[in-house]
Image (cartoon, rainbow, N blue to C red; front, side):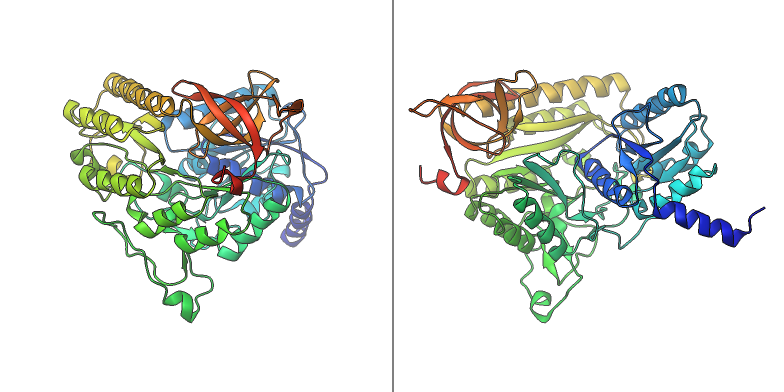
Length: 499
């Protein structure tokens, strides 16, 4: 029987090299999870593993999971049952991400043959965990970190030819909204060093990427404290937006989101910059003004409201009232008259009455969002709402309110999109349309999806357009989700304002 020291050496050797074993990734949830898969892919490929798209030929199957709603977790449990039938205990199955953190004990004791459980801050440990699992034992690491940002890991994107990319700038969240599981599954808020972010975006620019979206649970509270100089420690602090409050003491010194956004926008004048998701409290006028001044920072702002009722907002502990939210919307629209606003809403939160619900419907109609994410409330263990509030809205009522909110949003989205009819829009072409190989799909500066013919006549003949091209497009048709447009000419981003 091998000694413990020999076993450790054997595991170390296995962890350092994957022996060409094939890994299949299955991703659920938000874009943060897609970005996390890019990190894991980088770590495993550098350890000798290879990727496959075929579940049946995979030696290892890793599920990147989401816990924000019950429905998201149910999809994973269903997938594990399917994998059990396909795999019949062969190979290694791992559950990564938020669900691994939240229900780790259930995963290890379930009958779906989960071999590896790894939380969002333990991806560096995956080679070792997989080595343990390959030896026939279960392996788990769900330790949360107050420092881990994976700043030195270069993400490996699945589609290396894509003209759009997502760049993580921070991890975790400190806001502790009563309904939200994120602080418990992704840990406390910490920011990636600014130089690491800028280096990644420069690499993406060199690779021909035309749009970068800065990612974080609350991007506007970004604060790089890794290199505090006298200058950075004495920078003026934009602070919390007027009428809003914060539940934690804001960090001071270092480089804030305003500084980061400023520097990112200067890397490549032909690269569009977007960011998601912010908290409304972190939208001081200085950030809005910078968006106005930089043509490559998209005039699209995601402004999660969650509810239009002060009663519900207070129960959610969001840190603002309906009135302060609308005042922020007014300030944004004053500086950015053509801004495209998007939002999140929860239907049927604890204590929500029909009057509260009507206030949310009214807010959606008043603001005129171009897009909204709307979900029925799903109670999550560990959250303050789970511990202290009653989930007292019946499921059928939640579902009805959900449908009514979605219907209200579709009306405002149609109104917003129809206002663009006949206008000329700068469209970045992103990919071939899923419905027709003869069309391309792109987005306006405001983030609305546009379908354009793959070919257009530039006056001397037909020209074939391709992903990564900027075009001046005339909007000829609109519904609540998509625009149809005619290409007038190709252009550069920096030249569009002068056309």
